[in-house]
Length: 269
Image (cartoon, rainbow, N blue to C red; front, side, top):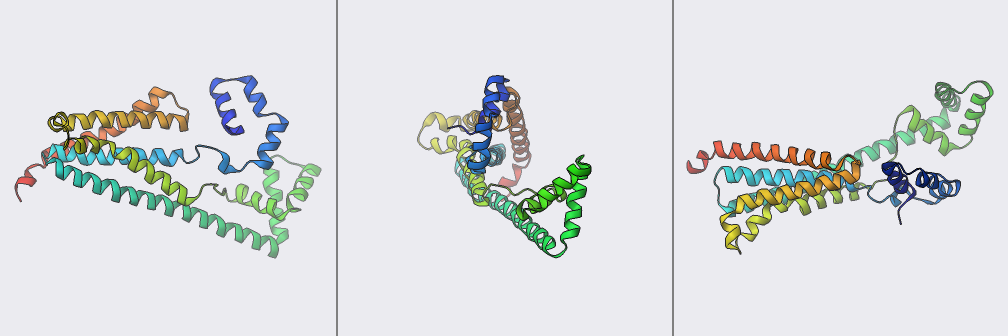
């Protein structure tokens, strides 16, 4: 079942006033705020999947195009392609994991600092809350009441300091899941440019048209990524597809001509 957020997103896309009112009913809001978990939002890892898929397709096809430009054998293309697919994909996922974990550790450290400051210099921290809400436009008794309410609950107090003073928000995403989604996208979509070379060992037509078929299959992969990316960004479908195809195509063209102009190196060893 779609979450309230997803229903609101669809309503916004279609400018469906009736549906957006349903998503903002008191019952829907109360249920979402008090019962729903951030992890209930389907698709929160789609961004990582697309990120991995784009990089996997572009870098793997760049290897294929470079090898084709250098007139290397299909066997060499497969070796280079799979080495890139597995090693570069793992490196990318590991980098994603380390980035998310580092950010999470930093947020945890700053939260502990804020908790310690509230315990040791509560008046100073209370004055910071006062200035934060003064900046938001609160005045007089309303400002005093806001400060009193926020500072009466330590968790809310710390949350407010984290968001409004430091601009830090705790991510609901798991570093392990972001890394897994990145690697999965890299492998599943990134392998597509290599499929033509794999099938060429079993089918004569693929053997005589390997690179051309790899180009077509990569184009299809980039179109699929563009469609998935559109689901995440809600951009115009054709704009999302053309943007992805253009970026991937430019990388492939560059790699092909680098391989083509350096192909003499192959014969020198």
